[in-house]
Length: 564
Image (cartoon, rainbow, N blue to C red; front, side, top):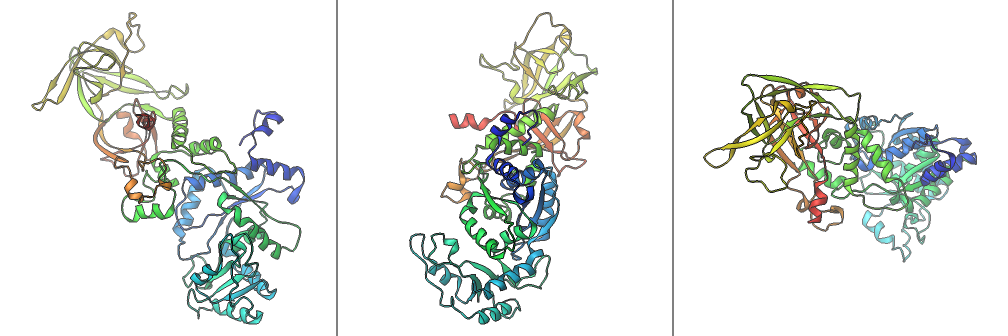
């Protein structure tokens, strides 16, 4: 959202609709020229990439306009909420590069919300209903037919006050009664048809213990918490558009001055080949389809982080997608492009051979080794170089040799030359096979006058392949992660999500050959495996077995598959 190096006209053209609203409010001096936002997650699970969009706009708007963004946990349902999720949410926000001004909880406001509910009862704007949830839902009507009044709608105020108090004393069973706002059962907006604002939940709360047995509903608590805190711009996703009039109605009953928080809605983030439903994600964890909430195939921030995605790539993505007033499904390729773009600038280039076959340079002296120099990152002239060992015996990718190759095959095949990256040009002379006909060794001769950096006598070759020396390399495990679903829009598919899973979303390769430079790599370090993709060191790594996760391939192979 930076406006650096832009003239005023260019800046105006680049504003999204939320930024335009904020700038207009500031120009008119609204809210004493304050900008205050909040990020209000419910601590009932781990944040996913969809939440990142809200985080970026909530914190980004505050940063951009010198305002305040608070973190507020919507902890109004103790059945699902845990301290573990509170801690993980805080950690994920920090990882994305943001800091909150204050930490609040909806439970901080339970006394004020209770007092407000009592006020509504006393004003004849709320009542205790003893019907079941099914009966209440049935009486709601339809968008084209008005609802029916509850038989308890005209209950005496004193009686509702007494029962409301009993609801919180723990003497009544869950579901036996609720507190409903008394608004309009014929309203065209279904949310106005006497919404439930308090229900009984007899579970200990992660912060308040057993003090409360009644808990406010989201629609009742959210706007009031915004009001109590002084929020100016309450940013939500589009599904809350029909909730906004109710948000405003409650605040009108509560407000004692001219200040009002205002809710604005933007498009939620949705990707192809991805499900963001917590219910489905939880099922995949509980059924051991995935290894946990941080499985690198998960769209959770913890999963993306473990897979090697960077905070910068996520922020780049949000800027590319933007904020609008209409929903749509984004191509996951855009996210993959963002991480490639970021890692291309940062990641050290290294050699790793995932499916090794030995290459013997038959005219290279036995026992001799050379130290070659490899540039860490050609995109960064200040990245420096690192040493790599060259020797008579090397490992190359099995796919980089073909005994009977087609005309446009520019890798190793008998009688053809290729360059070994950062080393010499070699001419393939043949191969050795085992009893089953599998190639076990490839043979070539090198030209000592073609060392990288030396004049090449004008000779050019069409192919360059990577390699690692048998001297000093080590074995590692490589996990090739891919898209979790085979279908483009799993959320719209009527089949059970389990039928849509990609059986090749994870391939584990053992005995991959790594150049010695990688021995010192730490968990989370990111690299480009030349000609293969971007990888990072996984937390499962041990001194005896390093594990690398593929973040993303160098190119989008899925587009080719779709085009077949």
